Amino acid sequence: MSFIGKVFVGILTILIVAVFISFGTVLSQTLREYENFREQERRAVERLEHLRREREHKEEYLRLVLNDPGFLEKVVRERLGYVRPDETVFLFEDRR
Image 1 (cartoon, rainbow, N blue to C red):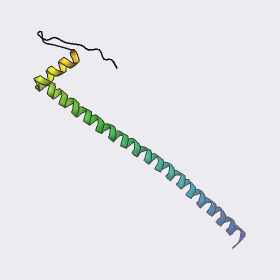
Image 2 (image 1 turned 135 degrees about the vertical axis):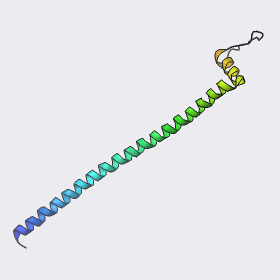
Image 3 (image 1 turned 45 degrees about the horizontal axis):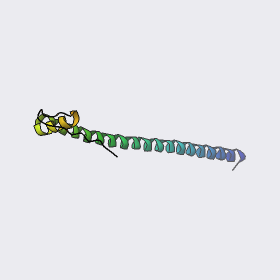
Image 4 (image 1 turned 120 degrees about the vertical axis):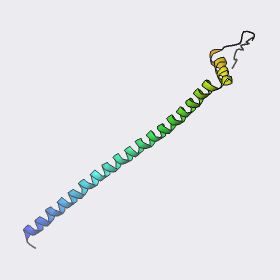
């Protein structure tokens, strides 16, 4: 093999190695981005499930407030402190 042939093979080898290194770098970066997107998707699905459970809880609460007079009375008494005219309320101080 002549000198020019050896130089050509050497340059070609260097170019092939450079191409493989470039592809490896791009592939590595792409995999990191893919893993990042998968993590974002996992968090989004987790948040969606949390929000669905929260919505179901609030829908059940609303259904009870609208359809269950006993539940509505309990809520009004607890949250707003309402009492009937003939009732006496005793308030105790919390000593913790």
